[in-house]
Image (cartoon, rainbow, N blue to C red):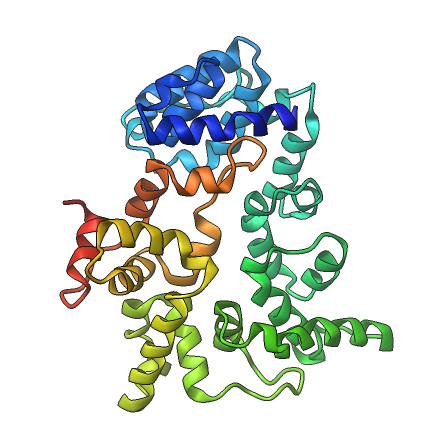
Length: 352
């Protein structure tokens, strides 16, 4: 089934780029195409009807997108009962997740359910790093040092690499973790943390984000003040970080240097490539200023985890990022721009 799913991803992308999702002949492909086109009023009724008719691809897709559908203006306009009937399988007071109804290829559905319970490993094991990102963040928040063991078994994606380093750093501190580590466990954590000093990561967004979180738990040298501030700008966004006391307490020279370094990282970081592409097309006069603005208005480093395909086996990440839905998702997440934000980037987020 995974090969079947992957086979129509390119068709969806080509259809969206040309005449629209109607070029897809398969009903599920067509419905997913409407979702990618951000046409919820067409996509959700079609997917719901297909799922109720027994199509397990539609069940899997509806189950995958259900948690992220709360921001849909179309669904918000429906009463609760109608919305539940649209998104969920019959059963109980509010219906049941369609994921539990998938029987022919249960691994993706089971992995999504495990991720919602806080376990990203099953999704990583079936090569679904994007869908696993939320559970990885949840794991970091509950047990950060456990990411080292997870990474050894099923590698955490590089877009969240800083969480593995930070988890190792905290795990090495008995005061923070409460762990009585064996020599072997200490060596494993130190090996994971040592990657942060690898020259290959110098100047990367991940290292900057790690510096923004770094404490001297493990004895690793603390990053220079400007390096910490740079990471904070990237983590929280340039506009949000201005309201934080640690940034406000820095000297003007440090603030200027941190903002400049953060902008330079965003201009090259792979994690910001999708935003840069949108800005290059929409704001060609100054795409870097647009990228900084969009990154900041949509939550800074949280962008890494918030915007992704529901499942790569259904829609490749590249197809999602190239779709109208991705831009619409960014706009739905964007906060109001401050007066000094880049005008073109601000208009891109709030609408022309």
